[in-house]
Each structure stands twice: as structure tokens, then as C-alpha cells.
Image: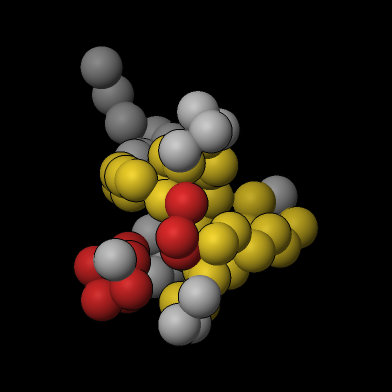
Length: 63
């Protein structure tokens, strides 16, 4: 998952975890055990062991 998460650095993403939580923001850093996500100027670390899906999204996407 670490190598796959690195593909999303500096992109706006939705991150899904085992406990049905969703995290939104730009992935800033990927380490051995966690990813660092920035959302509205605030940083959050998420354990890589609990991530099941990462999806890129665009805030300005037209439907």
C-alpha cells in the first residue's frame, strides 16, 4: 500500500479505512507506517495498516 499511496502525493483524495471512516484531503507524505493528509490547512496522520482504498477526486469536477 505504501508504494501505491505514493502515487497520490499532492493530489486531493478520499481515503477509506476498515472502520468505515473516510478522510478527505491532499496526501503530503507517505512513510513506512502512515500517510500525512492535509485538509483545510490541518494535518492528520493515518495508519497505513487500516487503509483499504484511496480514490482521487477533484473539488471542481463538473457533473
